Length: 164
Image (cartoon, rainbow, N blue to C red):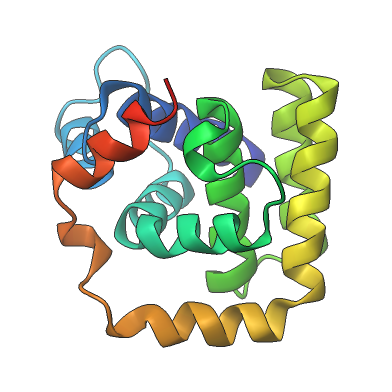
């Protein structure tokens, strides 16, 4: 299955978790055990979901650091999850060139967002790529924090409630 399709499936799952204020990794476990009416998640979608789920707090901190005017909690649910996927690919997946990660995020935003969101997403991801070395150093410097995979549902609830 194409990676573009896997990104869409990952986005659907991340969006669902965000909307339900559900832990990303627990929703992933549910989807892996019982895919329901859909075909099973592609391996790359699982990689994305797991990667974002395990590092969501650090990814969100990175987005907040480079975003001007809109913190993650104020972003539209779809936009922040498109950004989370792209930041995971840019900072943590060496197999995906930065330009491809940005282009794929823009393709998703053209399908699911409006023109203003597309411009915002492009600018934010471009800023992260331009400052990638410093961004990675800061991102990795935060790795001394508690592992994001064990984040409490309270933390996720506060993120989602601030977006409403």
